[in-house]
Length: 148
Image 1 (tube, helix red, strand yellow):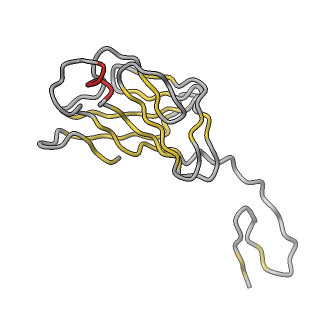
Image 2: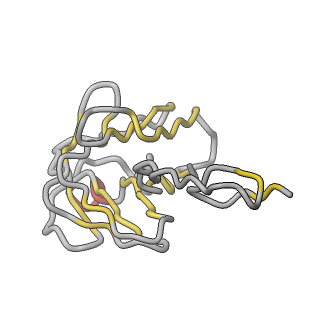
Image 3: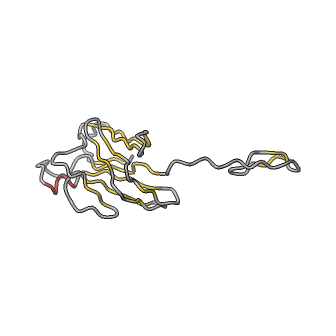
């Protein structure tokens, strides 16, 4: 009889069991949604800039420290400082404008919009620079946000 257990090599029962070291799993972190077109008139006010945001969700069981991780489009990037996103559904919003960082809301401190209303791609890179996730959206009439 054969059995498969997580982190264990499959063997016939009655044989010697070989335990494999578990691989270092990548964090269960991904883009959750993006408000790419600030509602109302695009007047570049800080309120309008902050109504443009992208959200990350951590679906894994453990918190993830984002120090050195980057969110970018084709032109600009934002590197996170020492901020931790909670596990089990923790959300972190990155707003385009200026503001006071909190545990769940961070600010790009940009004076212009980041995400293109005509379509764009957001890329999340880990601290070593490897692509961890992307979120792409096309121009969509009548919409200002998407779920990634």
